[in-house]
Length: 343
Image 1 (cartoon, rainbow, N blue to C red):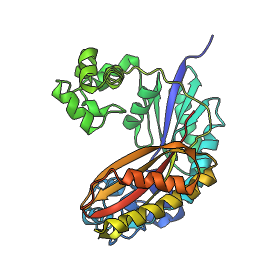
Image 2: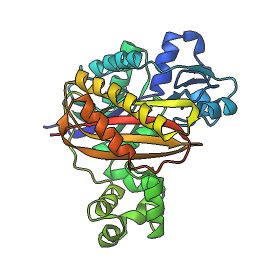
Image 3: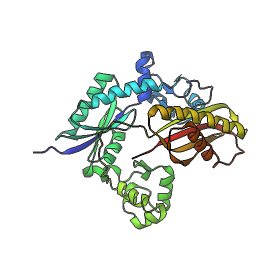
Image 4: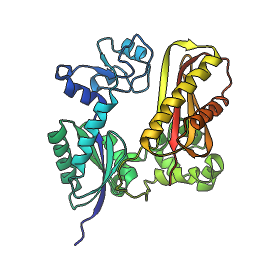
């Protein structure tokens, strides 16, 4: 008899902060904030915060200075990507020891396709193995597809296991707001609310043609499908390959001279070009991120004439993307991203 197929979503708890605490055991139980240069008196944003810091309202993406106001006793640390790469690799190697197809989604999460009559037991075994091998805690969501497994992890945190499948989908999700769904953000939720779809159940019952007319022929019906918990995407057991490489700079003093903005974009573009060469794959698109003072962020992008690793072409693409912005406002942050060609 063939065992049932399940999808497990393994998500490491407060991953970056947890790695830092492993390196500094004396920080265990204290509010820890990681981001930028680790100096809350300088500009920068929070990359992650420990659960203790989150209790004070410290969340990823907020300014470090705001985090310091909300949690004056927090320990601030600089981001250290190589350390997170190494820790993540050890976790993923642990997951690959199990009889499963493993799809790595980034530093701190992966999907596993397993065949077992008892997914909770396997989830617990995986969490134990991760903790034993890496000293890191993880939560595991169990689903009959990737969408449900991903959402289940939110109910499993911290360091727990939760199953979300067809049998309990409506019981768990029906009355939740639409942005509780994976793939729906606040802006889309507001558009859905304008159509009378405030909850997952209401979205699931909305006419597909109405959604297509408001949100597009592809995305509109797709939102209705995910509200019903439908997802046919496979778990793909290929190595994780970054989709892009990016660099960004937060300025301690706002840039008000557009010539200086162009100069900084050129510098970032060349740093990104070096990353593209090191990656060994050509870039197909280039995007520029501008964060206006005080904290409004917008991104513009261009498709390159042909995939390339040439620094001059990436620079030209970045400047073309920058030209889509209207100068005249103070700039707090600039970023350049090169997106790789997909096949």
